[in-house]
Length: 308
Image 1 (cartoon, rainbow, N blue to C red):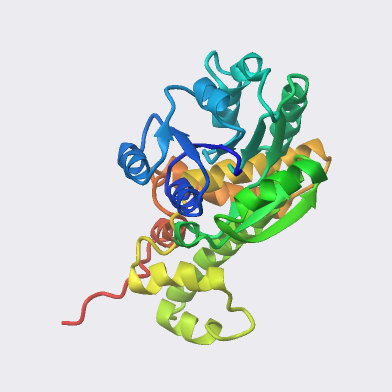
Image 2: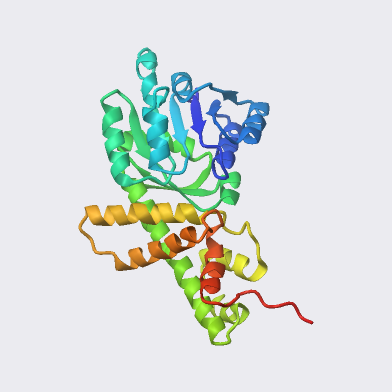
């Protein structure tokens, strides 16, 4: 019999993940204070709804969290009616509760929270995601999993419902560490693309010329193609990751580097680029819009004027 799955965080990624769980036969209970339309669709497809995170944990064997970051995860777990409050109510459960954090969280928070929950008989593993809402809906996400081998083995069939590639990165916290490094590389690309495009336009080279050289070359990649789908085609949904969340992740990276005594000047520069975008009122835009923001701050535009 399949384990009972609880899901919290039915945003652009979580909606597709939860739908795949249902479609592949996992008993699903959801809780959300937003995303009512998504909840209603899942209920119509056979899910049930819990009144609180605690009640969801009491009704489930495995709970998946797919929220913004550590602050939200800690509130869901440690709040007065949170997941941890269900520990006593689950004393007679056949299996201990397993919490899978698919958010992009701070590794130091993850390891501390895992230790707190372990004292209550609850296992927390981290399983952050890579790729986009499109792959979430298709069940083709990449997942980086940190945790004990037994817990990861238990989680794997569940993760396979929405992931095409699952990598066990090591102990608890290592998945979130790898996710920060992944996002550092991708947000670093974003900052480089944005600055290069502005320099090019200043010198009379259009984004179209820039792309004609980079696309198909050794510098091309899937991330580049998604970014330039916005730059060239103005596709707002090419990469649905908010600039404010990119800043959050780069701030986690700075904290991680500081704790490890590692100088990270490039990471600091990338973070400051996103901090500038947020400070100038662009935090809710998606990451490729950084190209327009950098261009605007330098008095140029990446959009060709209409032909007359």
